[in-house]
Image 1 (tube, helix red, strand yellow):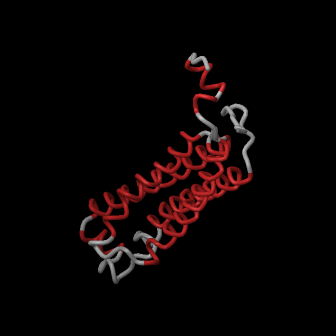
Image 2 (cartoon, rainbow, N blue to C red; image 1 turned 90 degrees about the horizontal axis):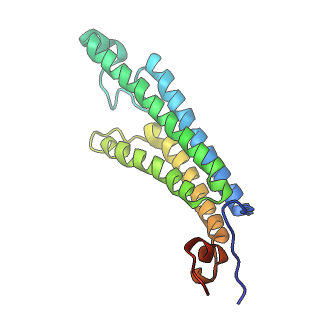
Image 3 (cartoon, one colour; image 1 turned 135 degrees about the vertical axis):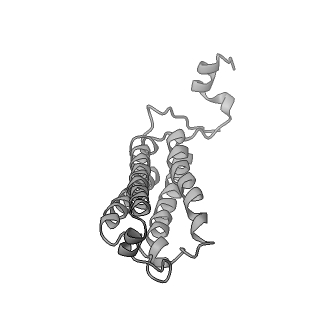
Length: 181
């Protein structure tokens, strides 16, 4: 029986791993782009992308007139959230490019877990409040779909770099755990 083994240091990433990690990193760049857009909209129209009079029946000026401190509070939330969105993108890029591309499964898990956690917390609040417009969530959905495609392709590539035979036959495993055949 032919077996293939590899260590993380010796991994020569295959096409699936390289392409998948690149697509994941592009998805991360999309998250950064959305964070930047979110930041600048705070100083322009104030409301988030895709949110208009149908979802919020007051304007930026009306909010500011009603309560300047509420306006400042919402503004600070926009700015802070834009930073977290961009930071999520940066984490995904770093993990995909410097970990997943090199065949490190832990990096794939972390690169997937970061946006999954962010979206699992953020998305549910949109639906009961009718803020789930395509204009509002469309870019995030598109970027997430791109990221998921990259994650699946990278995962398939990672599977190719993982030991194929019985784990007890792997020389690295025996050396690490001092197991004799």
